[in-house]
Image (cartoon, rainbow, N blue to C red; front, top):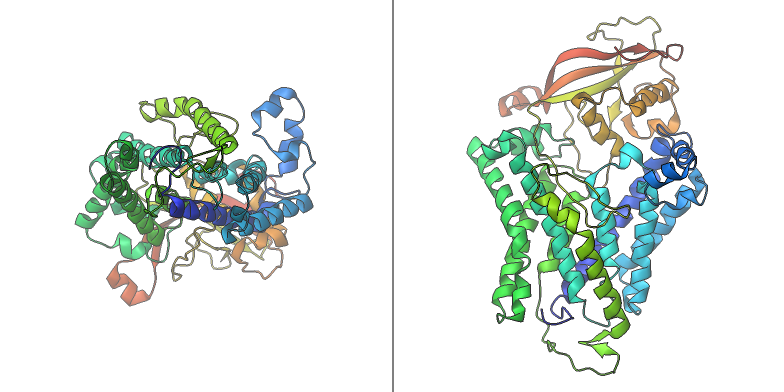
Length: 501
């Protein structure tokens, strides 16, 4: 790395631009498939109602993050059009087509993705209240200034990606150190594989590994999150220390981050969080191209191979980020560190982090229905049938699926219900939609036990789920065992609008 142009980071730029665009493509597809049932005109939490509230006063409008739907009335058709447009632009960037044009073209494409997806996430309410939503938005904004294939990437933008990885990983590491004792006594991973929001196909095998391995996992996590991210800054030393030492140190830091993220990919389902971190960490991998670090200035308006207007724009982005990052720096070193927080309306220079504490047991809310209007309310009564969800545990025989980087939003929120969020409005409306046998809602599920017929009653029952041991699995073929059954939402019918017990 030398001067204004990061001449050895052309490969890193390719991975960043195409990888971030691919994640936007997944995000728009996820939105297209789920938003209307969750948040559309007849969704569980209708976005038009939120927008009507936001339009009721200037104060309410300021509380809502920027969205095109404050100027253009929301309809489900317009939501579909926005998703399709986002899909097309993302696919073009994955193919590398806009990058063949001057830098203003990929810049415009990424800014369109950023503004389009922000318009969606801003009205997504709790279904879009995840840290990786902010991460995708911030990554898309920075990717807009990486330039095109005809020139080297700007040094300042590459460094801003390193700063993003530091906030993402170091912030998550500090959240854990300041959080539950299990991260300090190295026992967190003895529980996490079993109790994480959405286990994957290999989560059970990971959970059954010996305690010493789980302690080693936690040590590795601390190294990867508290130490390795800072190594990404090493290439900056190339201004004073000859290569290849700084470049090798930066690549080693990136490699450690990438390796730990890939382990999380194969043992869980954290939407696009882990894949995004992998893509962002590649920003620190420089590959010498043989090009001179001080390319000749062929034209009077280029500096180090970068057009002067483009250099002015990217430098302005760097200055903006220095100013926006002040609250994030304070937060990193604060005893009351915020997790997944934004300090400005545009969700730039955010604070990240997850799993400051690890739940010790897995409580699942199982939704059941019956065709009998006077079914036995006992939790063990056989006339009650379970609704099957696509990702969250239910059927004890079924091996958890691999869904990431796709985001199953309803399944994720079901995990939060027993953690003190049992009586949220969206869940009450979900039960109503199941009583109505609402087709869009049923398409969010894996299995409707009534084949589209309206049940007479529905209820919710809490179970404790645990992975089977190897011996239990050989005997029964089951992946899960469950117990501690308790009705948490009494049987409801369409004639009964009273709350849960």
